[in-house]
Image 1: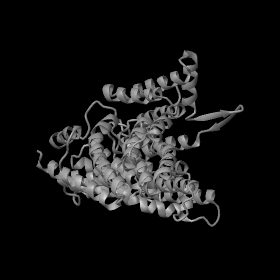
Image 2 (image 1 turned 180 degrees about the vertical axis):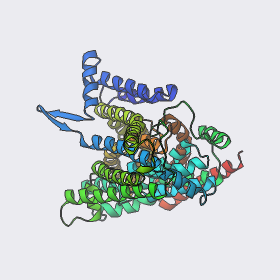
Image 3 (image 1 turned 90 degrees about the vertical axis):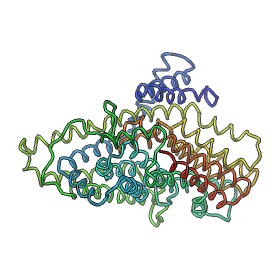
Image 4 (image 1 turned 135 degrees about the vertical axis):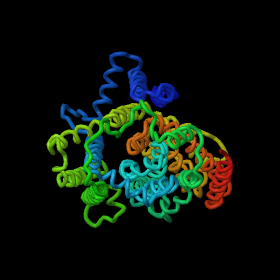
Length: 520
């Protein structure tokens, strides 16, 4: 069943079930069993063995009788749990309340609150995981006060994290992509470009990024929404309820915590600043250590251990949050020890739904990789015999479908970028960079729409939004941006004019804005 059309069945089944039932864990579980069933050649006993192997692989692998911890996954899980504790103590220390009271006097409109969240998403571009969670922590008190739904905040976070990371050379994404581009250029003996200069030239060709970012600011400034998002926003404005009651909210504290009446803005700002500085410093340290002496900044970011750096930054942020708490411990009548224990317990509990979803998403992604779903989709593109002018658009759509089905944009990069390079080199080498840019753009688009994407899951977590609410409200916005980008890639493919394609993308987005403005 590997590398065949049947490899599409598990991700499609999981995604359809998620949409129809809204039960994420059940849907992912069914998808995992379906993938294992295909890999086991329909043998029941072997199915459960393969499923268990994929599940346990998130924690450890066993090679020749020796256990090896899956450090990346464990560091991400620990970081999430630490972030939950940090959030709890920011609340307990009165930092969230003080920051909200301060911000409401300066951010005086719903538009201002949305634009602020979007700008933070653009500025914090080092890594998409970190972006999604950090921006959510800072923005939530302000967007809640201005009655902006959590689904809208999750959309803003998601549409400014990966899109910015994919065009930022000094980021975990940029370093990874530059490394892939370098191997492609070498393989096809392209000597007049360096990997870095190729990456920089591809930035204006990443039409989906500019369409997605433009869409965020358009809906914020026009204060207009459409699709399922409109229902969430109308409810938030009319009732003040930023989430629908009764739905699972990852990252949300389950119980009311004691809140200090002596809280200051520093109670929120200093833990977040410590977390940011600690994470960036750890990324530079781990990257320079792996890259060796004399490495430049790009080599450092290419070799950095993002998960370990997030964990280190999280620990530094937690220590800072506990120091802030300790300075106010005397104000709690139930005693500092009791409040400390409650804060830790509630912080961990708040992140467990996100951990469960992420754990199962990693499992199904691993099994989909074994089935060769991405390789099958890429093969369809390689075998197609269409006019070369259609190549950028076809690659954009294929990368979107691949990332949607597999839940990983990085995996789609790794599979489809080399294939795009081969097709362009064999047909028209002048389309090499447009073809690679179209893959990057399509993978981000598919990742935005996929309920099994880790970035989408963490955007829900950072915003405190129900995960399926986030997925269903974001898809219409992503589709509009994707249609504008696809038109741009058509123009680019047939004219080989980068800025004409970009102009078409922007023009279509502006036309949509006029239509949206006229709606009520």
